[in-house]
Image (cartoon, rainbow, N blue to C red; front, side):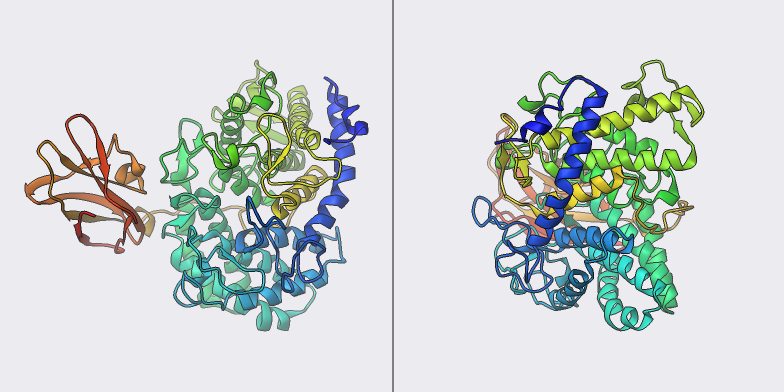
Length: 571
């Protein structure tokens, strides 16, 4: 059964009705989401299925799919929500949960796993069993966003404790955990990673954005507790990260979510990055992709519109009204459906934007963000509109209605129990995939808080500028690929791989190798320095028939500078 009759009765083609259903849903769902999120945390959570103290399960679902694991990323996002609620005075009963999480992460960091140990890359391991042991099965590893997100959650907690004069706990207990994560981020941010959906191995906008935030926050905390050398090192790497962050922008109107993968690049990854790096003190800063920046708003416009004709359930909805959104338009996982957390993320970005516009008393429209605003007023032009202008009132009211529309759709497809699964059926709106997804509940709480005007603490985004000359981001190295590959008459050998320079796994645009030293085929390509690169060779004949070499993918780590050569054999 879908949303109860009292909510359904509120749905009507009017702004008042949409606002009313959103108000009612927020009031009803908030306590359910909070209780359900806590139910998924060990040791006392009612659905945490034997999880150890402070361990967050992704979901109690154990089949189709089995999510009874603890992910570093999901856990950190959950506890960022919990820590924010405690430190902002929203819920001061959560101290015990936070202490348990700190203790659990001190243990999890030390678990040797398929990615390594704490000194050899183990912090990039994405998930563990809920009894704090290593998961050793095949998986997309490493995932380098987890350490960044965990460090920002714990730094937020550390900053609060410093304000309460509890310096010794910060330096003795929190800092060792935080330092491990920050050192990992500082050393590995320019290495390839699986994205937050665990599918694409390349560079990821979400990972880069949260890594940048982590090092900025880490710089400030390190300086506050006397770790001046580390503060300087983290700050330098943060500058490089900020430069690299700019490279994801596609001037056609969106953030390219991953540098590899062969998809369009339109992805909720970018919206989630914007809300999880929100810093109200930075205003509508574009270089950190703040929610109300022109680039973030155009990206949101492009992302939302990509789903208008993707799902049957969005049919017939006006082009200036909310729709359900998913991970990315090409998604096929579980049938490729809308997600609760991605739809709520759209609303949260818009609520964050309203917070800033109301705070600064104006909104700016540039030629970049103009398409976003024109969906609400086709006659609007670029310019600055102060809060006393009719245009400001009209536009902010329209954005509020638009953002409420996304929450109202989530409300419409929330079961009467208030339980939030991972996905919503693209055809009939029924819950799909893992039940009681912890991340879904956390995303509801953060969206509701943003709607209420709650402003999270600053992480240091205000006043940043780009200083990209001489940094490692622009460094490329010359890599010569050599492969011993006997061929049939009419066949040629090509190279493709997981980075732009290797054509993102395209067979049509794969790079032709020279047969001058047959049976060795060779080509030289400029690749990013200090980067893990996966690649494969293919053979194509005159008819265009493609033959891939066998799995697994080839992989190299390019040096920071100079040249590099491979000596491969066709498999």
